[in-house]
Image (tube, rainbow, N blue to C red; front, side, top):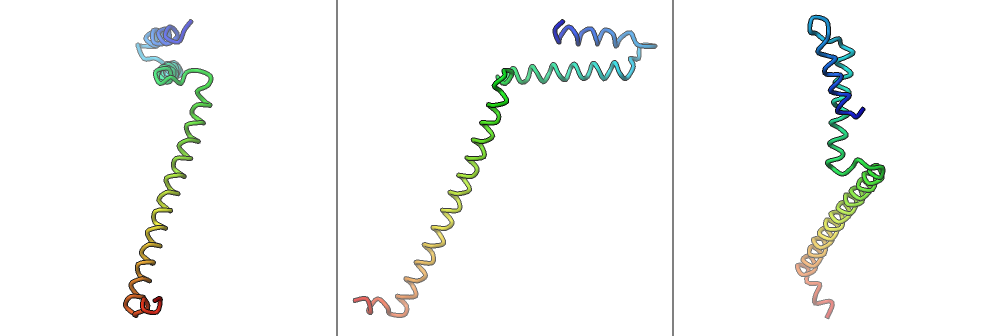
Length: 105
Protein backbone atom coordinates (compact mmCIF):
# COMPACT_ATOMS: atom_id res chain seq x y z
CA UNK A 1 0.00 0.00 0.00
CA UNK A 2 1.55 3.32 -1.00
CA UNK A 3 1.15 6.61 0.85
CA UNK A 4 -1.59 7.95 -1.44
CA UNK A 5 -3.66 4.83 -0.88
CA UNK A 6 -3.12 4.90 2.90
CA UNK A 7 -4.25 8.51 3.05
CA UNK A 8 -7.31 7.77 0.91
CA UNK A 9 -8.28 4.88 3.23
CA UNK A 10 -7.88 7.04 6.32
CA UNK A 11 -10.04 9.76 4.80
CA UNK A 12 -12.69 7.17 3.87
CA UNK A 13 -12.55 5.77 7.39
CA UNK A 14 -12.89 9.27 8.84
CA UNK A 15 -16.20 9.64 7.01
CA UNK A 16 -17.64 6.68 8.92
CA UNK A 17 -17.31 8.26 12.37
CA UNK A 18 -20.12 8.44 14.91
CA UNK A 19 -22.86 10.74 13.61
CA UNK A 20 -20.54 11.71 10.78
CA UNK A 21 -17.94 13.13 13.20
CA UNK A 22 -14.59 11.30 13.15
CA UNK A 23 -12.72 10.76 16.41
CA UNK A 24 -9.61 12.76 17.31
CA UNK A 25 -7.17 9.88 16.85
CA UNK A 26 -8.42 9.25 13.32
CA UNK A 27 -8.18 12.94 12.44
CA UNK A 28 -4.67 13.01 13.86
CA UNK A 29 -3.68 10.01 11.74
CA UNK A 30 -5.12 11.69 8.62
CA UNK A 31 -3.22 14.90 9.31
CA UNK A 32 0.04 13.03 9.99
CA UNK A 33 -0.24 10.97 6.79
CA UNK A 34 -1.12 14.03 4.73
CA UNK A 35 1.74 16.08 6.13
CA UNK A 36 4.22 13.23 5.64
CA UNK A 37 3.08 12.78 2.05
CA UNK A 38 3.29 16.52 1.39
CA UNK A 39 6.77 16.77 2.87
CA UNK A 40 8.04 13.87 0.76
CA UNK A 41 6.55 15.39 -2.39
CA UNK A 42 8.13 18.77 -1.64
CA UNK A 43 11.55 17.19 -1.04
CA UNK A 44 11.23 15.17 -4.24
CA UNK A 45 10.40 18.32 -6.23
CA UNK A 46 13.50 20.00 -4.81
CA UNK A 47 15.64 17.01 -5.68
CA UNK A 48 16.33 16.20 -2.04
CA UNK A 49 14.60 12.83 -1.78
CA UNK A 50 17.70 10.65 -2.16
CA UNK A 51 20.12 9.35 0.47
CA UNK A 52 22.80 11.97 -0.29
CA UNK A 53 20.46 14.89 0.44
CA UNK A 54 21.56 15.19 4.09
CA UNK A 55 25.22 15.46 3.04
CA UNK A 56 24.31 17.95 0.29
CA UNK A 57 22.50 20.20 2.77
CA UNK A 58 25.46 19.97 5.16
CA UNK A 59 27.85 20.93 2.37
CA UNK A 60 25.65 23.86 1.38
CA UNK A 61 25.54 25.11 4.97
CA UNK A 62 29.34 24.94 5.21
CA UNK A 63 29.67 26.78 1.91
CA UNK A 64 27.25 29.46 3.05
CA UNK A 65 29.15 29.84 6.33
CA UNK A 66 32.43 30.21 4.46
CA UNK A 67 30.85 32.81 2.15
CA UNK A 68 29.61 34.82 5.15
CA UNK A 69 33.04 34.67 6.80
CA UNK A 70 34.74 35.80 3.59
CA UNK A 71 32.27 38.66 3.17
CA UNK A 72 32.86 39.78 6.76
CA UNK A 73 36.63 39.65 6.24
CA UNK A 74 36.43 41.70 3.05
CA UNK A 75 34.38 44.40 4.74
CA UNK A 76 36.79 44.48 7.68
CA UNK A 77 39.73 44.87 5.28
CA UNK A 78 37.98 47.66 3.36
CA UNK A 79 37.23 49.57 6.56
CA UNK A 80 40.80 49.01 7.78
CA UNK A 81 42.30 50.38 4.56
CA UNK A 82 39.90 53.34 4.55
CA UNK A 83 40.84 54.27 8.12
CA UNK A 84 44.56 53.92 7.34
CA UNK A 85 44.18 56.08 4.24
CA UNK A 86 42.35 58.80 6.16
CA UNK A 87 44.98 58.77 8.90
CA UNK A 88 47.75 59.00 6.28
CA UNK A 89 46.02 61.98 4.68
CA UNK A 90 45.67 63.58 8.10
CA UNK A 91 49.39 63.12 8.83
CA UNK A 92 50.34 64.51 5.39
CA UNK A 93 48.01 67.47 5.96
CA UNK A 94 49.53 68.20 9.36
CA UNK A 95 53.04 67.92 7.92
CA UNK A 96 52.15 70.40 5.17
CA UNK A 97 50.54 72.76 7.66
CA UNK A 98 53.57 72.70 9.94
CA UNK A 99 56.04 73.17 7.07
CA UNK A 100 57.74 69.81 7.51
CA UNK A 101 58.16 69.07 3.76
CA UNK A 102 61.00 71.63 3.72
CA UNK A 103 62.88 69.54 6.25
CA UNK A 104 62.82 66.54 3.92
CA UNK A 105 64.74 68.37 1.15
